[in-house]
Each structure stands twice: as structure tokens, then as C-alpha cells.
Amino acid sequence: AWHGPPDLILQSPDGKQFRVHMKILSSVSSVFNGMVGLPQPTAEADALPTVAVAEDSDTIQVLLDALYPGRYPSTTLDLAALSKVARAAEKYDMACVMAFVAHCLQSSRFEDEPLRIYAIAQRFGLRSIAADAAKASLRHPWSMALPPEFEELSAVAYHQLLLFRRRCEDVFDTQFDSESCRTYEEFTQFMSMLPTCSDCAQSSYGPLQKPI
Image 1 (cartoon, one colour):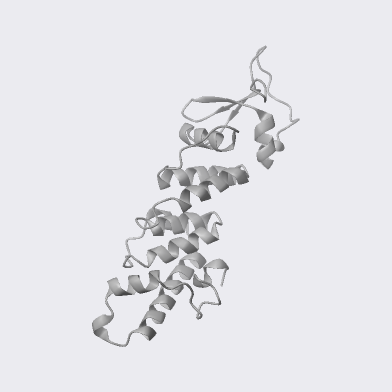
Image 2 (cartoon, helix red, strand yellow):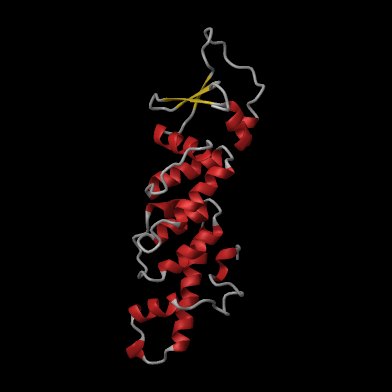
């Protein structure tokens, strides 16, 4: 390959080893770039230095597939696995991998699991995706049985979501006065056709674009 033989081993807690190229890792990660030139542990002749990482092998595999040229990781990862990849991308400061995560979320199950996508997107600073997920959540009745991803959601982001839904409900209430036409199905249909909300600081998605 054009990048030459591997010169580093990443070892996951489950014992799997990945032979990688420091040049590639350091070009996309400030963390690995900071390791260049550091003294390496003494190893046997011809043995590569090994770095133990905290992430499981499945996460490391996706991470490497997302950053190595010519590799194409699956974009249909479940949201739990995608959260692990996003956490690793944040930890190692890999913008290209976070862009991959954003792509997966955008093509993910907005209609089925919008609240999970909202929480993940907010957690990792993907505000436009969080906004789209918040709008998609309007098609679902609010439930106190929140997804596990909300455990890491900030109070501000949680409040933003509640405020957005409340403002959208208020807009709906001003459009329909008759109790007979204010069903939840009609509300979701109305909100799906609503392009902007003038009551939300000139934003299609209320206060989600910036902290309040």
C-alpha cells in the first residue's frame, strides 16, 4: 500500500490487535499526533510498539474503517454502537470520524427513534441533526419513559427540547380553535408541514440552534 507497512499496534481490551500506521492516525487525530516522537517501550527486535486502548474491537474497527482511505464502514450501525464510535472520535479528536457519525445519524431512523438521535446529536455537538430529530419527535406522544441516551443529556438540552415542543403546541393551538379538530394525529400532520415558526427566534427549530 502507498502508506507502507504498519508501525504501531492498537490493542483493545478483548485482546484483538490492529496493525496501523502512525502517519495516518497522526494526520487525523491531535491525540496521536502528540504521540509522534515520544519514546516507545523497549520491544523485541522487529516487534511493533503496542498501545492499549479502552474501546472494544468493534468500535476500533469502525473507527479505522472511517478514517483509512479506501475503506467504507457500514452506515447502518445501531445507535448504541454509533454512540461508542462518536465517543471514541471525540476522545481522539478525529473530526473525520465524527463526520461519519453525523452522516449515519442523518440517514438513521428519525421516524422510529428521534429522541435517541436527538440525545446523541446534542451530546456530540451535532446541532443541526439534533434540530431535525426534535422536529421528527413531534410525531410521537411525549413519554416519561425516556431512552437511556438521555442519561448523558444536559439539563439545557433537555429544557430546549421541552420548550420547542411546547412552542410548537402553542402554534398549533392558535391555528385551531375547535376542540374537535385538535387530535394528536392532526397536530403531527400540521407540524410536519410547518416550515418555520416565527415565535422561535427566526429558527425552524426553536432554541435548538444555540443555548438559551
